[in-house]
Length: 268
Image 1 (cartoon, rainbow, N blue to C red):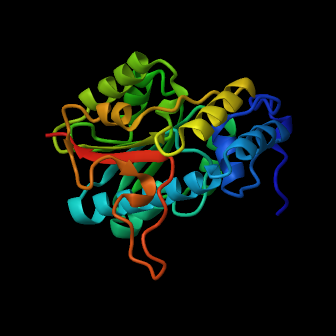
Image 2: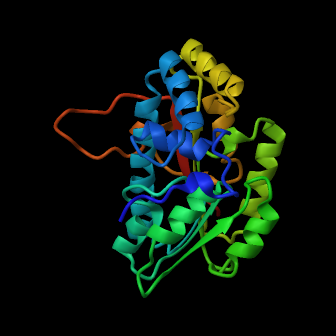
């Protein structure tokens, strides 16, 4: 079946870059438009390592979800800023371990929701839902998610590369706090975001380039990323590069550090 041309969809503005589609471009996907590729190339020109960041961030998602589903027994996932479907999406990893797992994806890009509804099918025992909502509206996210998830039972809140879209630190923290407050004890926060820690000059160039191109993304220090885990019990190995969070053994040795830091934490 030929790919659908989404450029004619009135809900999708192909002239304005969107983070999910820029990310898709860095991952080697085809669900992006010239505006997204232009931003992607501009950022890659000043910071070539962004492709490694994208790939290792995706691998971190898989390891974190697999750990939560297999080792901890989490059966509910709220994935905000899910991005475009690719290999080993949250529900695929979770339901591979526990077919009864229930997942709600949230994104504000209409193209993401079009692809999600077409491609992301749940196991019969579990459930998948897809919400068109903005991370800046946590109240709506929680109300809609409660139609699929039981918010009186533990939930893993996935916030991967999403709070960098909130430039103001206080606003980003307030969003995180409202979401975690609504979840019960035994829930987890899985969070990663871009940082300027590894190569500050290149990171500053990349941040400026994205802002000038119309796709602003706020890079934070590891200490600022760690602050999002306040009042939670942070699991080992703490706040680290996404490539260093419980990496899987391989014959090439430890993976290189990349400029996205992460953590996984329990709500006591």
